Structures are given as C-alpha cells and as structure tokens.
Image 1 (cartoon, helix red, strand yellow):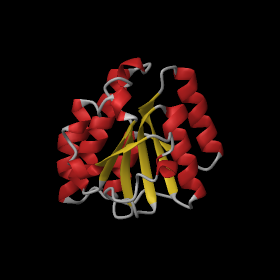
Image 2 (image 1 turned 90 degrees about the vertical axis):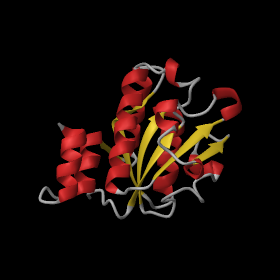
Image 3 (image 1 turned 180 degrees about the vertical axis):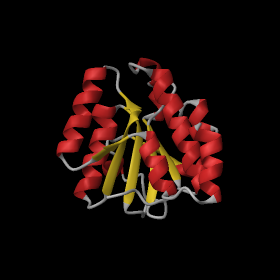
Image 4 (image 1 turned 135 degrees about the vertical axis):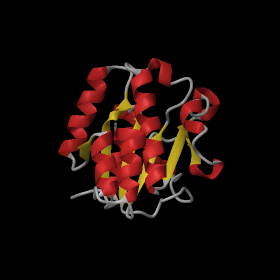
Length: 180
C-alpha cells in the first residue's frame, strides 16, 4: 500500500523544547521532521502537531512551531493522541492515512500509532523522523509497531509516494528544493 497525498496527513508528535534535548539524536530528529513538514506543505499534505503536557515540556521546538499555524497544534495530557481526543479539529484529522513523526517513539508515537491501527487507520511511522531518549527504546518500538501492522518508512519514501510521479512540475520543484 502506497501513501496517497490526497488521503494522508503528517502528524508531528511532541517535539518540544524540554524533551528534544534528551533524545539520543536530537538535532537529527528535528532536522528530519523539519524537512518532512516542508515537503508535505509543498506537496499540499496537511500537517498537524501535538504538544504533550506543554506546561511541563514547553512548546514545539521553534524549527517546527514556526512552520505551523496555531490551529494545527493541539495540547494533550494522554500519551496517545487518540486517547487524548486531540486529533479532531486538527488539519487532516479525517484522512485515512496518518504519517507519524516525533517523540518519544516508544511512548507517544507508539501508543498513538497502535490506537490509530485499532481505529482502522492506515499508519506509517517515519523511522528517520522519530526519536527516543535511548536508541534501544526507539528500535524496539519500531519493531513492535511493525508487528502490529504499522508500516515503517523513511522520509524519502513518504516524499516519493506523496509525489507519485516524476513527470510533473511539482516533482521537479520538490526534487530541486529537497531531494538533491
């Protein structure tokens, strides 16, 4: 099953100022998510984001927050975005395919992905755009999600599937701006 730009949304989970520095590879995760958000926006895929317990963990990191309008960000207290019921009202919340990035892979990303699978959604987790404090937790979460039916992808897989074809003007623009 391929990701369809007209049926998917990019969900950025909890890349917050007090959490990101604790990730095993913080700069890499933020850079990958920033790239993914910009590509999604260029292609026309809706982007939504969450902040877990923002009073304690702060807001999204500036690199991500500045790319999103206020109505694309929701606060939550539950680890799972589904359990928190914060997805309704966010851009693309009604789309069948959810492409997930963010932190922490073994907590909020995993619980959200598994709840979305339970709800009948097609879930794709971008392996190079998720992070945890310990790399082992990230790796185990990716394995578990795969076993539960989540599709594990890379950022370029998402971009090329959203684009679908190389003979379009949009492909040439994305290729020039993001893929070279």
